[in-house]
Image (cartoon, rainbow, N blue to C red; front, top):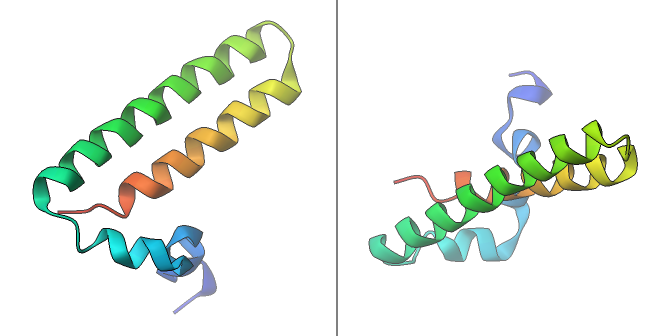
Amino acid sequence: MKRSDRPDVRNPLLALPAAQAMQNLPPEAKAALKALLIDIRNDCRVRAEECWRKHKAPMAAYWKAQGVYANHAQRLLKP
């Protein structure tokens, strides 16, 4: 297996203790949290694009990174 195929490399949040605890949440809580994280991810992507259009590259990079972390977090909540 290549290093880039390892789950902990593809999603660094898997190494956090709280990531394991999230697996014990009730299904309704997982679904609500996942929906929230997807909304955050989408909002971050919109903000990054807006900053990029306004030539504010540092803020675009900030919002892009926040969106990536939100996406990693929502992937922890697989059904």
